[in-house]
Image (tube, rainbow, N blue to C red; front, side):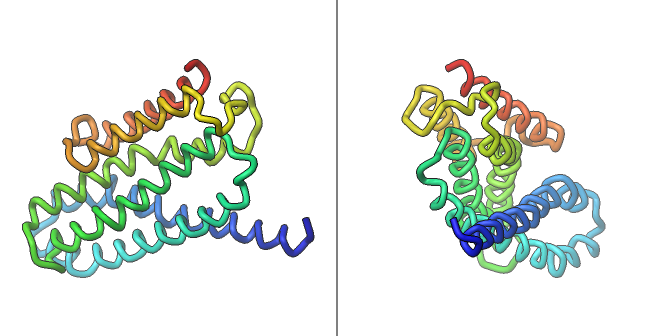
Length: 213
């Protein structure tokens, strides 16, 4: 590999990381901070936040997601030969989270904030449900990013991209969770503590599946 190709690859990884920080940072802000503030704010404060703060934050949120997705696709193309289960599942988590942002969260948030016509309470509930699931996916996705590049057999890294039982099980779990994100209920994801615990629990389940299934 020439120096130029190596530098370009590094710049894509660096950009992917920066975009990801922006995206996930805003995701955590919405779920851990803004949601709680909206419940406690005065009528004037809430109206001002919805008119000025939330739209600006959503701009950084959705374009951070776009940048992360595009740079991730570029990196995935360079890794096509050396795929392992963590790369595959991490890419699946990231893609679903990106689609949730652009196809569910953003369209419904526009209605909830009065930027578009529609049933604001229903739209807000849909956006929140998808957003909570993105938080749920965030810890295992970050784990995949780190584990995929470190050949540690204790992490189940030796399981490659063939459709092994463990990979199939994880894809089924992800599909079931995403179905709930689109059509189900918040359940334990209703509270901040609940979604954090669920995200860490899903990470543990993923590692156990990759090691023992």
